[in-house]
Image (cartoon, rainbow, N blue to C red; front, side, top):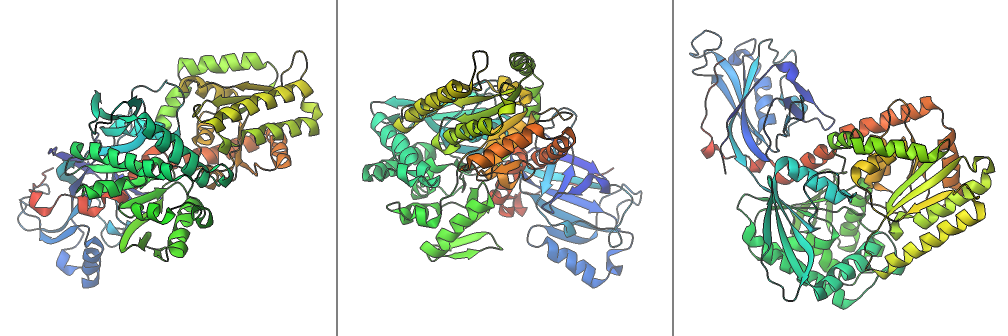
Length: 614
């Protein structure tokens, strides 16, 4: 732990309130994840004792138990020239439960206090024209420990396009520092519960090698042949094998054995995704008492489908060793609550956001993931992106560009997308030779048979469409089974007039958000989005479609191509405003605030009050 005293000065206008009715004070700050006690002092227009008793009591009640209110003299404060000898005032000691963030360019960081709007004075009751003062008495550094199956490259931003988890956590850790623990992607003859720790600037990575047998049954087996298809409602592809279940529990136990010695007493752990559902239980069995949160990036299955999994009850029971469980959307959260309420006969508190079963209570909420908008803007403005835009437009000539960017995965609805595009070309022959579909298929899990088979099917379908509809000098479908650097991909996004993001079922889908973030505000493209993607709940201004219906998607393609600029701009502005509001910082901050809670603020014994003189 370190102390790092900061002094904040502001006026009433510096406090504003976000959509969650949480107060924010804008002030310059450095980067860290931690918490602090803040003193807010002000002089009311009348002595405290002359205020109505109900007003004083109401303020104190709203503060309790998150802060301590001191009514009476503010000793030693000479900023009004009175010598500081006894003028009445109000001092608030408020624990902040989340981090400041490093200012980007000229923008100040934000210090967020998790308190209702009524906590701060309003005009009429506590109005004051003069400045008030905030100071942190003590900052306590809390290291963020991210745990996931794989550890992504945390250096730079121009590497090949990555999944939502990799992008989100790499960005968060680069900004705030911390430790990222996970599998190295390598195998070893004999497992050793000791991770290799490497340093990358302010981020440490701890990498663990696994035995090939464990990789086959834990990663390729239970994670990707059992849980992945099950959570995406593909029971026809789900493998129910006992050896997979045993290996899954064993590898999570290996993760816990290697991670526990690396932990500090005040670390905050954030475990990610379906590979590591039982990790908290394995850590608790080793005496770890830190706050542990879990975030599921993929959908949670319906209770009836989850119940087909052998030992489904034991899997869910292990989740009750977490302090907080996060889901991408309210839909996935309700599916989890339904399972707890009906399959487990547990208790669900909708208002409090908790579920109770197995004599344990855990908080469960929805935290939709967003983009790092500043990073995305930098990618779009990069020389590589501009070159990519120019190359795309030169290649297209007068043709319109329809774009798809997906991992080669059966959940992404790629075969259905190709069929819908073929239907559009049949229904709208006047558009032939005036457009093409560029489908970027990022290779994924190439050692799994289902994925290799899907790639072969896509090649065959692309060849069929080009053979039946194309001409000697026009290929209606360009299929590229390759990853692209993110800056190059940003240029591809910007050049496309229509994006087809049509998964059959998806936790969130950040491609939809990246496409909107990369658009030209004066002449944006149109987003066609599956209503079964998690992003659909936030992106209502997109053209929402049923990906199982070829006609529905074909109609949306035509509408997108013919949409007037005024409507495109209006839809884009609404979508872009949502991306800015619900960005990566908002996702991370809201999750960590909920996880850390007010009890993670420094205790009163650690506070050494110091008064501020103007």
